Image 1: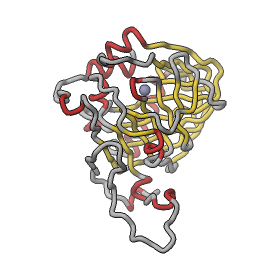
Image 2: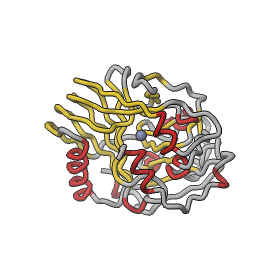
Image 3: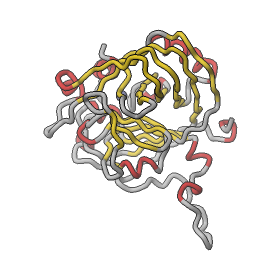
Image 4: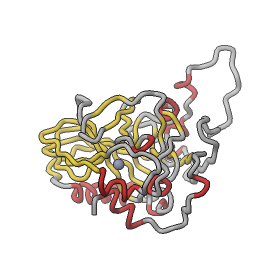
Length: 282
Ligand SMILES: [Zn+2]
């Protein structure tokens, strides 16, 4: 457990787009520079890095502001989407996958850009076996009981590796300019599919309640199959048996994008109804 060593204060870093954010003082130069991976500090590993606000994406700001390559410098596990909402993003074990509108999966190219994402470096703090959780609401109840135990005011990234009787998921068609709001786009361009008897991984993010203006609070899950052939944004699931690993994450680092839309967005409006709709189909 590394959490005791870390500051529990929110770390909010605002920075220009397309450049790596200055998260911590650069280490003093040495004669032989360490590899990039070795420069990742313990604090970086326990930080959720967020590109933009979900509330910008939901207003239709689908312009990418960081590349897949840059996102990989901020974590190895996470969720998000691509420029133009061109599929659902799943980052797992350092690779970035796109779940397309037909539920098939491909590796995303390093130069593709990303309008919204949350990633972290995954270090398991807790591991538990689960079985017989037959729907997403039961999963959320189980996970929320754990959050109450572990502490409700930090972020958690989880991965659920195992066998699923069913995963119901969605992705969407790539959008063209001028971009509509996400609720409008999904009302016509969302595609849903079921994966039966699937092996794979659900990547889940928990955002605490005070994140209401910056993201969706509670849980958000994306799935990718073990063979990396299928995936999407999880709408429902039936878990046969699986292992849940929790990464307790006490830092938060948000990059404000410099897209053409972002400076003009009214981010004060209450979008909670739209966000519930795009997250859960309800
Ligand atoms: Zn999603």
